Length: 67
Image 1: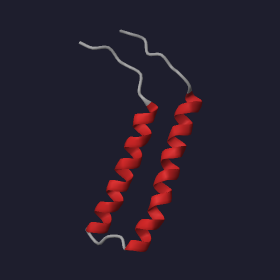
Image 2: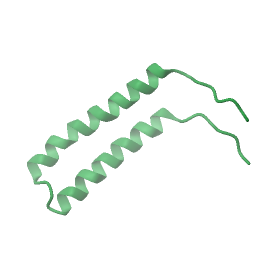
Image 3: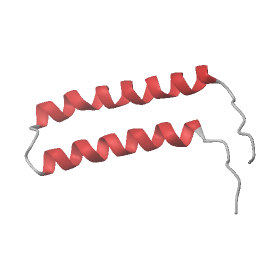
Image 4: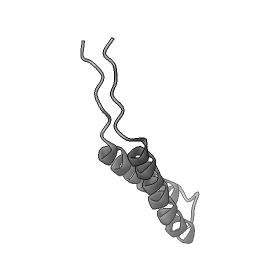
């Protein structure tokens, strides 16, 4: 069994960005959002990913105890 490892904040933030843009594309493709609304969602996705990155950076390096 493997132990817990440290989360990679860079990968997490890029995953949020990719997932957010994929969700925006899906909502546009399903005609739930129109083109103007998708362009409004793009900056919000980047702001959310940036906030997540800041939270992870401020949180610092916390080590996990092995059981």
